[in-house]
Image (cartoon, rainbow, N blue to C red):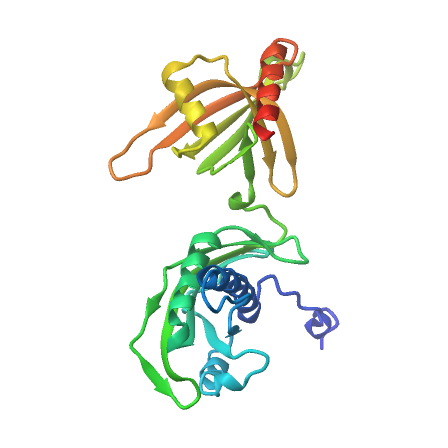
Length: 319
C-alpha cells in the first residue's frame, strides 16, 4: 500500500441510520402496549375479563425469517403464542442528509393472524395509526422519529399447518428518523395551560435598529433600539376552551387579551405572557377550519392586572 494512501481497513464505520430490525422492534413494542389496553377494554364486564392480550407480537426485519416463522406452530411458544409479522422496505432509496443521521424510508408491515384474533389485531393497528403516527422518543438516545401509518387491510382466509386458518393483516408505514435533532411533531405548545395541536408555528425576534456608515469605510454599524418576540401559530378550529376563547376574541373581542404561553421541544423551554395582536379564522370547503394567531410578549409592568387576573382564573380552573 502506498504510504500516501489511507488505510480504510482501520476505520471504524459508524451507522447513521437505524436497521430494519431496530424499526421492527419499535413497532413490536408499541403494538404490545396497545393490544393490552384494547383487550382489557373489550373484555371488561364480560364473564372472562382479561388483564392482557392472549398473544404476543414477534416482528422480523428479515422477510425470509418471517416467512419461515409463520409456518411454525404458534400455540407452542411459551408463555404466549406469537403473532408473527414482517417489516419490509418497499424498494425506496434511503433519503438521508449527509452526516446528520437523518433518513426516510417506506415500509410494508404484514402480520399473519389466527382467525380468532383478527378483530383484536385490526383494532390494534387502527389505534396504532391513530395514536402512534407522530413523534415518539427512542429510548436511550436523543433521536426522534415520526411515522405516517396507513389503516390496515385484510387478505382472504388462508391456512397453514402451523397457524391453522388465518388472515394477513397489512399496513404501510413512512418512517422518518432524525438522530440528535428536533422534529416539529415533538414541539409542545400550551395556551392557558391547554396543550394545543399546532399545524405550523414560527417564533420571530425582531428589532428596530438604526444603521449608519462607519467613518472612512464602506461598512455599516447598527444599533438596536427596541426588540420583541412574536409567536405566529396556525391551529385547527377545535371544540376546546382555549380555541373557543381565541375565536371569540377574533369575532367579538379586542386586542388586549393576555394569554399564558408555554413552549417545550426537548431542548429548549420557554414561558411567557403574550398579547393577542392579530387573529384570522380560515374556512375552506371540505377542509378543517383553522386559525392563524399572532402573539407578542407583554410587559408585566403594563399588563400586571391582566396577568394577575389570568393566573387567578387558571388556578381556579384546576381546583
